[in-house]
Image (cartoon, rainbow, N blue to C red; front, side):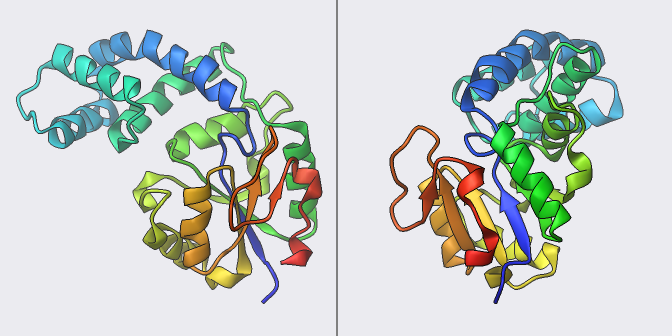
Length: 227
């Protein structure tokens, strides 16, 4: 079946890994502790603090312990949903203050715009929270790109290296997997999507290959009609 929807990763795919590791993560490490301390009673923040207690197995953890747990998870690059959600809240403040601007490769911007105009439905799947995804694209250096996308998926749909996650996403999109093209720079993610029945294409911006999948150095080389 011809491709009708394109599902894309962010980090290393639409956006530089360095933006996440050299800009977003340091910003979160600097601002997350005081954010949690100062806004712990706000319902949305309090909900995530309770989720941290639950996931860490420390139901009686006080705020300072919560901060310690979160910073530890960040150091380990743990894909914990409450951490990702709180990071997204911190980044939202940074974007609103003009301290952060989302990085999206020029070739990705051009292709996403072209595919949208050609009628492809565009979706995002990243380990970062949906809120963080919308901020990267909504506050991009080139302006607001969110009108291009029909939906966003994060670890709430499952982990990115698990087949079932892609089955769930296809169900949410409302298309059979073989009508969806998934783009990523991680071979285990591509494998999982492929095993779920999706078409795949790997991004190798620094060269190399992703075994078992077509691989390109730029979005410019991707033609959804070939799948």
